[in-house]
Image (cartoon, rainbow, N blue to C red; front, top):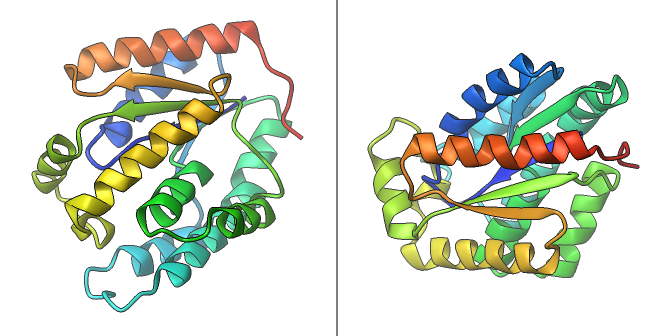
Length: 210
């Protein structure tokens, strides 16, 4: 099963994913974790370009296309092979992040963004997407305290508010795929909620995505 964690900056996705994966492995699942952008040698090189603080001249369309290049490599090299073996893939961000950030955040045409996503992914969609939701100001304060501050984090607060609203709209449009968790809770409560939601979905079972 393909499961993704999404959310605005500072929502805690990255820190929540390793203990979540360990828990699922203890339950007997063959879990592979990955992240976007990245997850492959090529993707990690693209990540460096996207995140470099001095790349301030990058156009939103360039940004969107670079994300798709990294994503295409990740889908073909990592995600699909593990899914075909019957495993579980947990990804820190995926295609919905492009719709939220480059679509709603930058204001790029959503139909065009969706088209390049479809091309990059071959149409692969997650069976479950968990939105870790947190107020923008709280999330950015959290992010500023860690060492992961990157070029996208430096966009305006108004940009990040559009991103968060975009996530809410995406979740409302596909309620059967999305589950929202309040990420302002203590980390252990968020982890408990993640485990409950994902374990229930895994036990219910889902067919292999097309």
